[in-house]
Length: 255
Ligand code: NAP
Image (cartoon, rainbow, N blue to C red):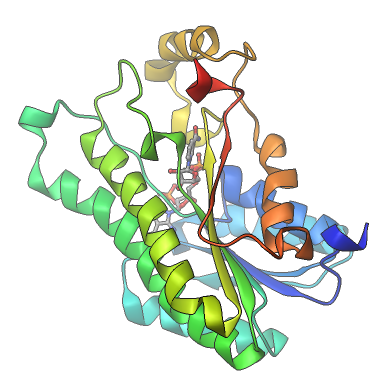
């Protein structure tokens, strides 16, 4: 049990007001961590709900508003976390956006927004988090990439999203090598299709039936399916793992 025990550690999760980030924040709390809940101001209700669930699980929680595309906002958020908890042990960078467009018509502003949030945002977060972790003597960073970092999703027109996630995967191994001697581990977690607000709405209903058919396990994942993997990457259970990518996709990429 102690390999997966996060008691006494403090963690932050970005995008924690919704979907996967909300469940991962609660999952880390269920395994002992105190939490900072980071998301956009527009997600305040969701963030407050996450904090409430973390407190119901018996852990301390603080909500911090952040825009991951703004380097100063990220630096202030990490500083607020350290001021509240005294140190940063675990960071899960989950904030992300999706968007669809045929590549030949993709508007530069949509390309930029997806890259800014999904890739540059993760880099800004890693920068500030690593500095705080150096102070603490080490830590574990988990970047939420996607199986779209490694495969092209059949039927989805999302060149910018796929490129951003491939960037996150390689950025992760690169930062892991830069920081390996300073005891900061950096890994990515790559989910397959997971039922969240990102893929809900009428335009997704038909596609989701296709995703189920394409997934060897015959179903979409849920945020619950990602709790074990993120706790593993955050905790001492993965002490000898850095620069890796953990695919959690119901077997999708083996077919
Ligand atoms: P979600 O429910 O939409 O959660 C993403 C959260 O990130 C939202 O609260 C979103 O706020 C927030 N966010 C967006 N831009 C931000 C910014 N600039 N600064 C701070 N926060 C920001 O989506 P999800 O499905 O849980 O996705 C979480 C992560 O998993 C993403 O990185 C996604 O790419 C990845 N992922 C998802 C799936 C899937 O099938 N769902 C599969 C593989 C990977 P707004 O809603 O206001 O934009």
